Length: 393
Ligand code: PHB
Image 1 (cartoon, rainbow, N blue to C red):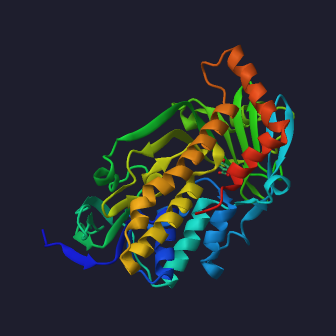
Image 2 (cartoon, helix red, strand yellow):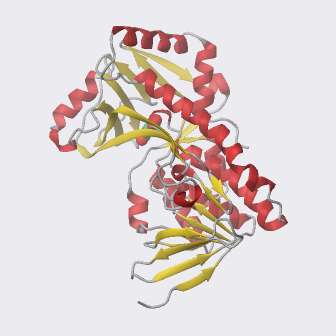
Image 3 (cartoon, rainbow, N blue to C red):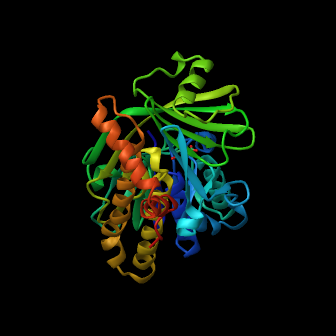
């Protein structure tokens, strides 16, 4: 085997997802050089279907990409959602309640924008490079040891290493141990479909029904995204298209769905997770490497962006002014918002889904909970504040 190639940079970022790419952008704006690696191909990153809601603060961060951000032009602003139960819809009017909105703009489109902007900015961005392990976290020369697509060994020496490498993070091993943290599993999953059909509604519908939860989302005037609650072990190919439409429709009673050919289906298992530590010495975790939320609150990518906005400022102080206080405070600051996001995602999930073990008490209490929200301006305001996103640090 040939000897490893060693390269040097200020910040080594593992993972070219939203968190890693946004961080490299903000660092570059502050004049701090970084290298970003990802084990996937660019094609894979730009085409993996993920969720689609951006908080207003996330869109504002992406505005920094200038013409490269299409969130406001291709994405659609939504000023509310519908909460549906007992066959009736109740609009939560974000604009009226909190004067803020969200944007429906899928994550893979955000990634195309970020990659285009970073490459135009001369970013050292390397695809198909797999991080094997991180070393030197308690020194001022931490390093990432990686393997390229050709099997060459690559060592990236840096002043700081950031694990933006998702739920199977390699960086997490040195920060908090791969499997240590706080978990919650859920006894259900989402069956997601993409179909060629006109929109069934102008805004997202989050629907609770005796048969379980459904989410009616959109992608464009001719492509729609919808999900329904299912068993986590279901085989996605065990349903005919007609059965899928019937499963969806029964969970949205009183609102007729517009059907069309289904061209993609997937089962999303979900859980809640927060790593026990977010930083050790000169290695920090951001985004899914640090935490996971169930998709019901649409918080995943937004929490990642919020982590990055905190860490970027901390790294600027460390690397430009030799001031360690921001890095020392990173975990505590980020965790405050992460746990608010965990609470909101858990709450939306438990309020809207039907647990397999639910009895009459659980179902009737759940309706009481939904009424508490829709019949009170205070209840609606909490939902609106959390959904559109708390102010960024
Ligand atoms: C989506 O459109 O994929 C989507 C929207 C809202 C969610 C989850 C997923 O809460």
